[in-house]
Image (cartoon, rainbow, N blue to C red; front, top):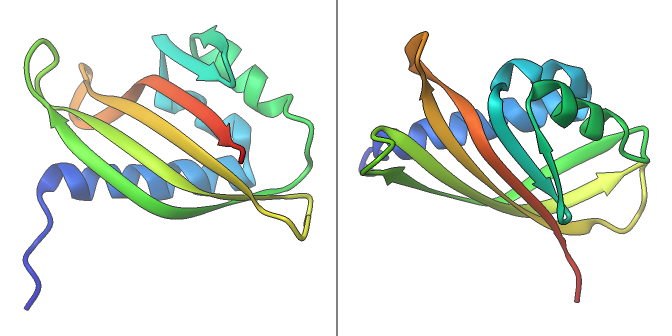
Amino acid sequence: MAAQKPQFQQVGEAFVAHYYQNFDSNRGGLAPLYRDTSMLTFEGEQFMGPQAIVQKLQGLPFQTVVHQVVTCDCQPVIGSQPNGIVVFVSGNLVVDDSPNAMKFSQTFNLLPDPANPSSFFVHNDLFRLNYG
């Protein structure tokens, strides 16, 4: 029998599955995952707050996208933001049915939602395409 994954890993993996399912089907549906203090750095450009973040994501120049997660590494955050989770994802992006997938990496800093401590929101979101 395999050892049970730590709770932070389970939460991180569940978040990643939820995030990319929403991103791939309805980018506007990601707004509830962010707060006014949330920040996205997307290929070096920074956006703050759910409206600006979702506006950026909805404005990306493709009609369809599929995220294929290859790795999902999670760590608990201990210190100034207890019970947070850092999630590092690497994978492939298939856009507009292109035969060539692009490599990407994305890091999320998840914090407990003050209004509902059993759920999390994205405080930091960093995205990069990986070339080379």
